[in-house]
Length: 114
Length: 112
Image (cartoon, rainbow over all chains, first blue to last red; front, side, top):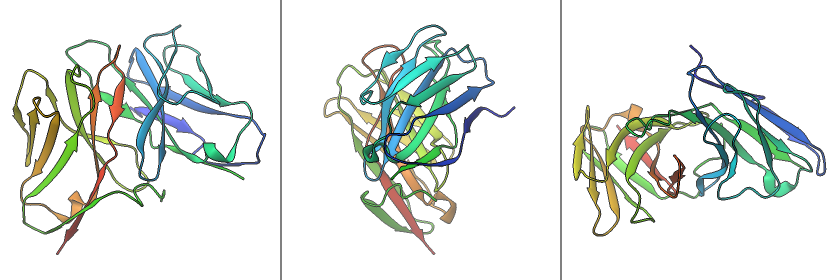
């Protein structure tokens, strides 16, 4: 049981390049999330998907797109990377039962845009 | 590891002492709160949670207190150990369906 798996773990991009961060969970969770973490800023919500087939913007969605490919997978795409997107990205998943808000996080993707 | 937490406030304690980490949350409508621990190079790890209809909840060596009047959370760690050294975040659930919003975090440094 792997929990939440993110790939890649590290990536360096040049400004203007595009890439997709992959996330998969094996806990049969309905909801999935993408966060970014910058020094001194805590984690900020980029996008989330409450259930398969739906996605919504979080606090900092500009410059990103997401796809909920199926119940297991939720990808984050940077169409034209900018240095301001240098950060550590975390994917998470959770149940949607209101009596159980357990969130499980992946180990993160460290992205550097030069 | 990541450069997470370079500018975070730091709480330094001696091994064996009790630690208290504080957090102010933003939304009076939040109905659920979670404390997370994050070690270098890892994702946040669940510690303890509390619902808005409670004032206190205890776990193993940890206690969370909630003061809704002043929108304040605290995490108390008893008999702090070197393995407790990490960055600690509070998070609140509000504003819609299961959105988890994090506070800025506090670094806990445990000295022998």
